[in-house]
Image (cartoon, rainbow, N blue to C red; front, top):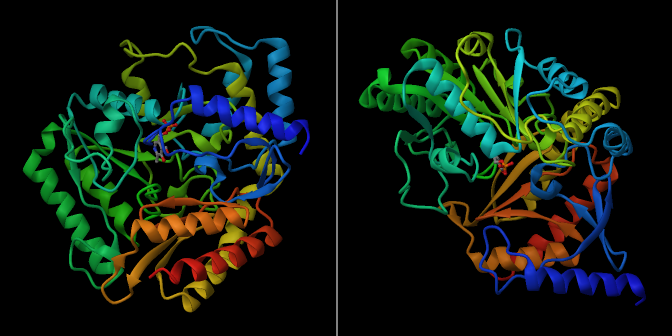
Length: 439
Ligand code: PLP
């Protein structure tokens, strides 16, 4: 192999020598070095292409290296590559205006952050200051980020007991396949999950609760689509007890579910919306909070005590303006909806019909999970060795997977093509066959 391969070896060697990785024991790591990408594909330094069915960390909604977004970042870099948040900036105003254009009426302002975790931090701070209450209720199966309040709000099995939780209370959300409520139908799951949440609110003392924080569709913890009536029920509880509703749309927002916001599917309006990832596909790190007008008004004559050096960074803002424009004019959100309904729903159901290890298929848009079990009757999760074999087989067939616990998350970019979906389904099929031989 030529000079490109040498770069690949160098990328790998430098990574192993000097880069400390997230969520990992460092010694066992053997990451592939990614050299470039376009659309739903990335390639290594040898020119081997991979189907990116993880969208990296479920953020590359518009696909890799979208030319209009790249050009917008380059153009902004030529004019003003950075500016302090206290200044007015045209690109920032345009980005905020484009974002609120997709939000419900009565939400006119955006506070920009560097990513999703600090979006949740600041949403929590806004809720506490607005209500004068302290506690935040969030779900055990959730991911909200990896900074102070965000990590405490998170209900993630990887960090138990929840030793940092103060001012935070967790509850169980709906998850019919492994129901905490002995429910036998979506209706029962909704009714019982809402009763549980109301009891938690009452037991904590609603006058001490500032907000309920929920992922609209729970992402990392399993692509848990809420059953009918659940989110409107949560909204009604929040209203009854004077509690705010924060919907975390960091993973589910901006096209992932085949809608601009995931809550567009569920007949619910939040008070605060947190976003990141899909808003610009992570070409430049950014996140933010969309704020309902009465909450924003709380700070008309009172100082909001918070800020970030890079809040509303112009390169990120330019990438947002271009991304949202491209998503609308190129029908990218509609493509995600069509791919989900016409190809992934039937294609994954067909896989489930042929693979005994698939216990449940759930999702919408380009946001799906296959829950893998050793036995459909007991629903026992497949062991780590099964997932290890599966990962190796998927990578060998040049598909970058998103695997979590006993699940495959099928989360390609919103621009994925019919042909790429067909190839991916064939690869999942083959890899599952090989992995099932280990059971
Ligand atoms: N909220 C949700 C729903 C997420 O999925 C994530 C990241 O995966 C975050 C928040 C944290 O975002 P970030 O990693 O940008 O801080």
